[in-house]
Length: 236
Image (cartoon, rainbow, N blue to C red; front, side, top):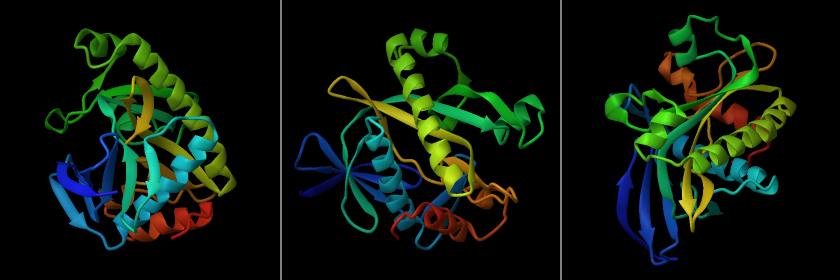
């Protein structure tokens, strides 16, 4: 496959076109950001770890009949993915209270949420990804009711599969963000799943092993990602 021009540069990944109209190359950079990109640092090996981590998780989801954008692990920092028409609505599943939920509602961090909370956010860094609902998304034509229904269905399936996977590794899947897109008219899980977009705690100690180590200045960010990968058996 021929790698062509850069077509998009996000906070942590760069997207390249290829000679296949249905395929793209995702390049996972070592960039780590917070505050919608206002603070950025480079952490050695972070891109490689997230690339391999994402490939591992996406394969687990494919095995559970959840359609994903992932195609092939191409190199240390690159993967081949399907070219999606991305939907500008982020889905968040919360199993335990943390992050913005704690700030918005004043609940205690770590409280179990039964059933899990499902939320929608507009993907817009300039507006700081505001929380929205189905009505808003439909009115502004960011997504149809059918698409939103399917996105929620898939997000909860992902939660069921990954909660069990992380639990076996001695980890709590606290919450996570998902993005979806259309591939030949089908809703498909896109972007990535890594400790950048999920909160992962040790089951016994509640030690944080995700991007909160960067957000909260806890240090050893990459070391936390590696620990999660090793527990899951991700080949690094």
